[in-house]
Amino acid sequence: MSAEAKAFKVDSLEVRVFASQSDLAQTAASAAQSVLQEAIAKSGGAAVIFAAANSQIQSLAALVALGGIDWSKVTLFHMDEYLGIDARHPASFRRFLRERVEQPVRPKTFHCIEGEALQPLAECERYTGLLAAQPIDLCLLGIGENGHLAFNDPPVADFADRHTVKLVKLDEACRQQQVGEGHFPSLASVPQYAFTLTIPALCAARRMLCIAPERRKAQAVRDALRGPLQPACPASWLRRQSHCTLFLDTESASLL
Image (cartoon, rainbow, N blue to C red):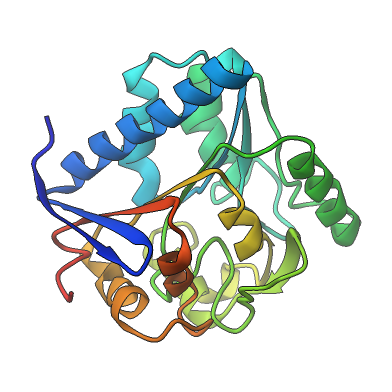
């Protein structure tokens, strides 16, 4: 059993703080398992949107290891992808999720954003159609070092965005995070543009589990929970989501 250190609410958002990232990962995985099991039992299938980031690795591994989910009835989506890179690129989010989720569990299908699409705007429309084809039961997301959700960085975040999927220019802090996490050798090698699901599209899921461990996320977490509710910290919008739970460890919660 995981050792939970603290639980509280900020506006409508449930926040749970754990003694370690391992405790966080196990509890978040169990919560995700329950959501998917319930959706399959009720509707005969489930759809889930995954984030692809270093902060998600332990939770994804725990979810895969738990078992108890009929993955043949689960449709997978992801929430962002770099423009201009293919699925073989080491930093591709498609590759990240194929290796960590799709290949181990063999879901019903994995709908991918084609980062190398020759007509990127048409790709946004195609993926929007796929997302609209069924309700999304679960969104597993994280918080970026600049407070972003998916690739909704502060300069492009829109809490009332009319789009479901859009192309955005990544800000420098976001691109520098990708270097710091080891996905690219230099800032210049990080793509400047990416596809992203918008904030309303992420929040439209029936259940949201936001997994944000590590000390490098502490300032973004503080800004999200204690600062103004504004696009300058996109994650602050989670405070309006009563169907979301934010999972922190003591390091990411250290500035609260």
